[in-house]
Length: 332
Image 1 (cartoon, helix red, strand yellow):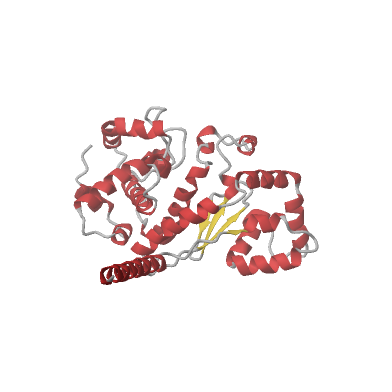
Image 2 (cartoon, rainbow, N blue to C red):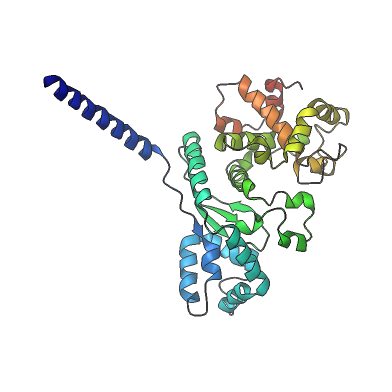
C-alpha cells in the first residue's frame, strides 16, 4: 500500500515538472503572429463604410497607409475626392478581377502566420533588442513583393499568384521574372527585406566584390532565419540553376578573376550578377541571374565556419568585404 502511494506521488511530481517546463518553453516563444489583411478590408469597403474604414486603416497601418495612398492609389488623404478615388480603384473591373484571383489563391494566411512566428523566434534569439514588425498583407497592383520599415512588414500577395498567372502574362512579365512570383518565395522575400532594412547601412561598397559579399551576408541571414527551406528557394533559383552553379563553381570564379570583374565599379559590367536577368552575362544560358547571391553565400559560409566566434550581428555589420574573402579561405 505504501509503495503504491509513493509511486502515485512520484507520478504527480513528474507530471508537474513536465507541465512547468512546457509552460516555460511556450512563454519564451515570440507571441503568435496575427496578420492584418488590408486587401480584404479595402475591397469590401463601400460608400457607407468607407469613412469608418479609413479611420481603421489609419490606426492599423500608421504611416504606411499614406505610402499606400501615394504609391498604389496615386493620391493622398488630403485630396478633395479622396473617398471617391478609393471607391473607383476597388470597383474597377481589372482590380476586382485581380483581387478575386488573390482571394482564391489565399483565402487564409494561416501558413504565413505559423511560418513567420517560427522565423521571428529565431530572429529574436539573435537580435533580442529588436521587435518583430506588424505584419500585413495588401494589394499592390502588381508593383511590389514585400516592403518593410522598422514597424511594418507588408506583403503584396498579388505578387505571389504563381508563375503561370494570367495577369503577369498580360503585363508582359518575361518568364525569368514570372518565376519569382511563387508562393514558396514569400518568406525569402520577407527576410531579405528585413535584412536590407536592418543592415542596408552596412552596404557601402560599389565594387562587385563588396556587392557580392553583401548579398552573401543576406543569404547567410536567410539561412539562419529559414533553415527549413531548400537552398534553391532561398535563392529564388530553380533546382536546375543551383545544380548548374554547383557543377561550374570553378569556372564561375575563374570568369570573374580573368575578366577583372571582382573589383569592377562598373554596374553595367556586373548588373546581371546581382539583379534578376535571364542568365548571368558571359556565362551559359543555363546560369541564373543574381549568381552573386549564390557565390557570395558560399564565401560567407566558409568565413563563418573558419571564424566561429563571429556572431550573426557582427557578420551583418562587417564592412570589410576583402577581409571576409581572405579569412574565408575560399578556393573553389
